[in-house]
Image 1 (tube, rainbow, N blue to C red):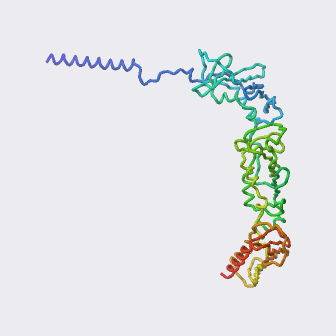
Image 2: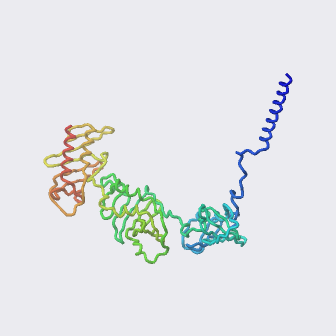
Image 3: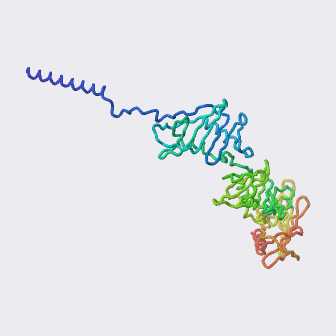
Length: 446
């Protein structure tokens, strides 16, 4: 009994010792998962320059491309001293002051035998006359950054900051040279080496009515005709502005080496008139160009110039022989070989009745018949003068008392010459007219 008591006491003491040892271990021994303190000096940015951009008077940058000084003209305007005749982006120049007002490094390079070779320098001149000089060296191997030297100390800076030292002068220019509001275009023209190719303008209501089309534009050269809205619209969709890819030469003396003037595009919108002179293409397929009011050559995407150079002026003209809104028509007399159809509209107050050859007909049938007469497409332009009796004709009598006479005279084996009030410009396939007559008959007899 006594032995059992002694044994229990021993077990209790041992248990207490084990618990005490465990507690001491937990309290005194470091957690293996606990993070070791980091060297904050290696991860935090090292401040090199930190001033207000307003305290900077000018920044002189020298690199392999050029040496130039960006200066403050006044509070909100900037320029480059060496290139006073070139128009720069004020916003882009202002960023130079912001870039050099705050310069920091990723880390300082110490104890290195590295031979620093300067690739670009920047002298930041402050309003008080003091100068902060920095130099950028080579790109750091295996690191995203460049070497920077300042006050005889060597640092590593981010690549984006090094880019501030390496910029070309042209990088400060605005590449968006001109905008075009293609929804408000009033004039459009193309010329080639001084010779006019095509001229188009918005049409006036009376002349559009005269042409009898639904067009918005008329061509004034090489022919005075209405312009097909769909075809012309596809061209205008591309005419949204002029953007430079690269600036090639300022104040050029020999434009022939760029082929400038091979195609001259002029467009007028509600804001201004823009003239672009296109030339040859460069090795990358971009086209050389100049604006009429700017004395520098640049390259731009060739998409618009390619489209413009392929324009066939006469291909833009409306191909309808005649289109008139039915609300302006009292009657149409359509004649073919041995057949005559008179489509008449009688209006009395708010009541309108429709007749074909004096027989009253339903409105939907009449309008379908009217569309059959209207749906006559030309397929080209007459190249010779012909005369003779018309084999087909359509006479439109209007509500204002005027009329138009469309006559179809034999042109050759396949075509008729289309005469409108005695003047012939178009030709039309004979089979097209025969098909329209058949469609009209089928509509009436349905």
